[in-house]
Length: 124
Image 1: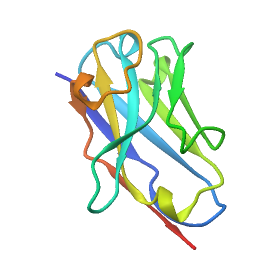
Image 2: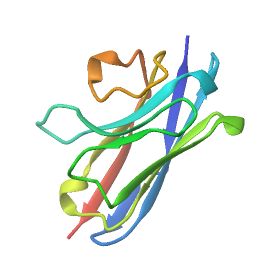
Image 3: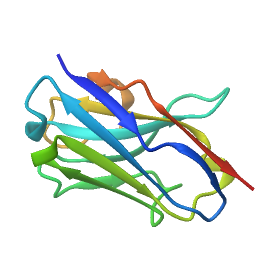
């Protein structure tokens, strides 16, 4: 069993920055790839970014490439999502997810565990 707890969401103006954190507990965090997804009202949950178990491989959705950075600190069992140059269309609930795979998938169904989510609201 894995527990994931996100934090760091909030209200920010367009062009601003936020850093999301996700703390994992319950199993060996360092051997799991991690991902961030988001879900806006009325829309399906979509892939944002993912990182391999060692952090050497990362993937990003085209919509956030160049603005968001995913990273991890295995000593702290934490994965981060640094979000810069935020846009109103980035407004969503952001979810952290864990998979037993070593390489990070972009497909939602390949993740086994999910956090409760943290709200990010970007005002124009």
